[in-house]
Length: 265
Image 1 (cartoon, helix red, strand yellow):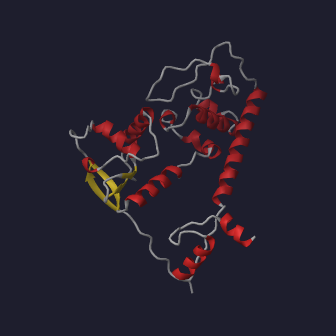
Image 2 (cartoon, rainbow, N blue to C red; image 1 turned 135 degrees about the vertical axis):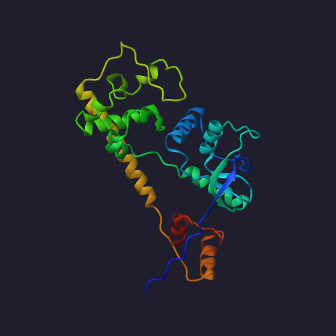
Image 3 (cartoon, rainbow, N blue to C red; image 1 turned 180 degrees about the vertical axis):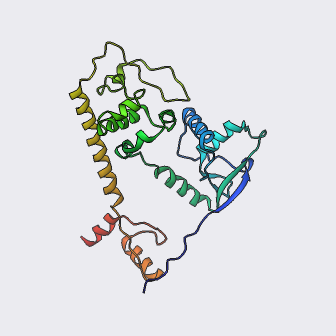
């Protein structure tokens, strides 16, 4: 007979005033003005979709700083004027637990799978693509893969982003003068007319290299995600005895497998 799973603890959704929210000074994520303006533009396009996590005990944000920065910019909030309502997920955590969750949410942010995005990026309105937050080189790689997969169809649809000037050999782009900064859209590398262009074979080799790197990163990420197992005990006393043997804090939720292996050996 299968035992029913205990319901997971869930947050409480509430609407509070912006003035009740403290920006967490320990937030490990750093958001540039360019990224915040992109977030503001996204909010204006699709609205606020939620997901902000706020700790009632401390008043600190745990997740959602970029969205708050962007909404502050949109509403003109300065700490006193133009206070506004914010939908938040309310949790109640100790300062210690808050720091742990703040770190987990920062480390949990992963880089996008370029090969996967390349499969559907041609379906996205090309006017929106610069506002999705890609790094310049990241977007070029994705569009190069997409164009190769579709035999040129993506290049026809997204020619503004996938010109010959955009596909340069490694090292060449570093020698070019930077474009004038524009915080609303990703900057484009400036390539001089003297720069030798890639022929078809070189472009294919470049795309192949990008794909190989993407596949290796995906495989490595998959291996990391599978590098764990769950060990359970019938009683708390049994767990405490095990933790004592391996020399770990009995309240710890994780134990390094290598520590257990050393005992076995």
